[in-house]
Image (cartoon, rainbow, N blue to C red; front, side, top):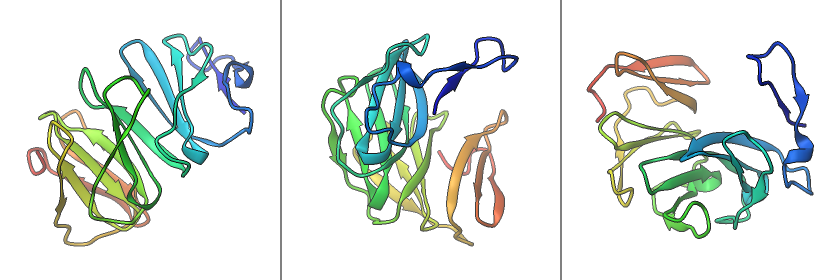
Length: 177
């Protein structure tokens, strides 16, 4: 089930009918890019709708496995990620996908674009991977106390807040670029 609010949560409208999802696959991630809203989820589902979240249409999926999230990396590139280390890049708004190699088979569950333009990905295996601006090389970052990473956010001061099974950790501003 999907619902949408146009008044900051005061009221909600049914929105499932606006989404081309005939198998009712779970939706796990949402992001915006260049006037479009993208949804990702089960069975490699990738959907695109306009800025008003109208008329979501299926895009060619990068694989048939579950995707947990995605992001616009720069003006041209979309990145989606999911099960067993699956990370995929599109340079044409999701029409085609290239599989990227990161050295893990853990589920990639979170990601963000750093102020430097580099990409940070987190896994349920307790790993952080830093990708370059071209998104063609990822390096594993050392973690003193690895934990299952469920989500990440960039704080206003530039710190990276990482949350998971043991709570929240803060990576100081400039420590990861």
